[in-house]
Image 1 (tube, helix red, strand yellow):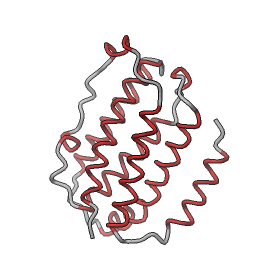
Image 2: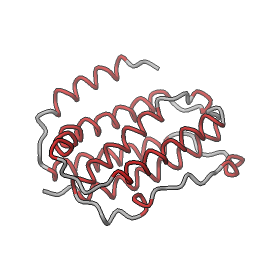
Image 3: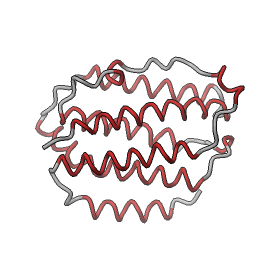
Length: 186
C-alpha cells in the first residue's frame, strides 16, 4: 500500500484544520459526517464468512461505550481522540490475509486521520487546562479494550476470521463514536 498519497492528504489536513476552531457545532458536523463515511467504508469490505462466527470473542466492551450519558463535550473529545488513535493503529497492522481493498483501507485511514486532526487542537487545550471530568479509569478501560483487540489479532496471526471479528467490533465502535458526537455542542 502506498502511503505517499496518505502523507499528502495528511499535510493538507494539517494546514487546513489548524484554524478550525473552537466551534463545537462545526466539529460535531464534521466528525459525524466522517464517522458515517468510516462506517460505510468498513461495510464495503468483504462480509464475514459464516465459519468465522464461531471465532467471536467477548472483548469486554468498556461500560463507557455502553452508556455515554455521563460525557461532557470535553470528555467526549478526549474519548473520541483516544479511540480514533487506537482504531488507526489497529488498521495499520497486517490485514493482507483478509482480501480487503488497499484503496478502501487507505481512504478509511485518511478519514480517521482527518478526525484526529480536527480533534487534536481541542484535545490539547483540554489537557492543558485539565478541563475534563473523565478519570484515568475510562482511559484505562479503553486501553485494555484495544489491547485485547490487538492481542486477539496477534493470537490468531491476523487471519481473515480474526479481522472479520475486529471489523464487527469497529462497526460497533463507530456507532458509539457517532453517538458521542452529539455531545459536541457550543
